[in-house]
Length: 66
Image (cartoon, rainbow, N blue to C red):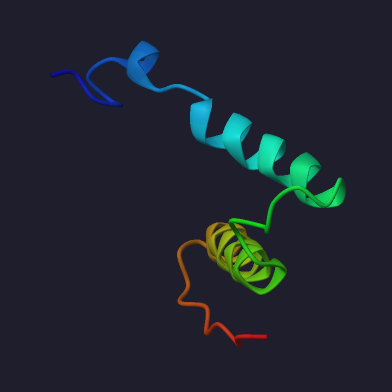
């Protein structure tokens, strides 16, 4: 089985697609959110810390959780 780095074409957007579909269904009142806003915010905090670390040449970044 080829994964990611071995075969970039093996990476799909199906997970993102399902999240978007769920978000729309939640707005319409048909489903509960699969990913809470708090969990989504934690992902953004981690991504921002990665970028900040890269900007600072790999310096360790302490994460302050919301």
